[in-house]
Image (cartoon, rainbow, N blue to C red; front, side, top):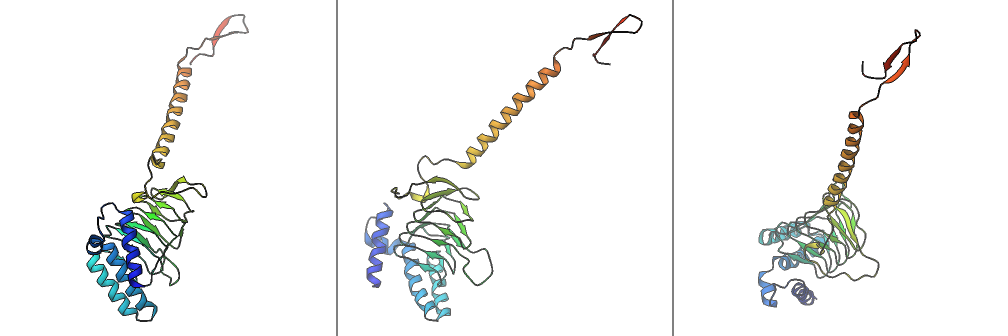
Length: 241
């Protein structure tokens, strides 16, 4: 079973990383693979009640790989942690099958209670480098989290999220195929910040046009209004005093 899982991991890494040229290179040079292997040992200890041993093994894994996975976290099959440095996966996190995480990703908690406080990532999720997924939320199947995004709410399946806080910028139809995309970034992805700035520019331009119209109206010359006095004389009225 252990060797079957290891072979699965190696094959999945070679499929998702064109820089992996051989299985031996993956075994010797990929810290993400080493971290997952150590986590499986630590998680087995944790489940059997040897919690200090589990924490110690995960600590050793962190020292050697730069990847911190709490032994209580539940990790699915064929997890690929690319590059890996700075990845943090919390105690109650759940990671599904065929998930890809890049360096600097945090699956963190936002509360101090002992219950579920870390994210759940469903199958085939991709989380780009530097992204923060925080709290007991769920990231749906085949969702994409762009680099440096901060996710604080549930993510529906098939949605691409970018920005701080993260916003949905792309939704796939149900059943639509989703190709693997490095760092969770699609081609020609719309930029929500750029769209917001463009909307503000349009509003400012409209306000400037309206202000110019009002100023032109104020600057137009006024024709005096002629009124008749009681004594039959005429006087100009309506002009500035």
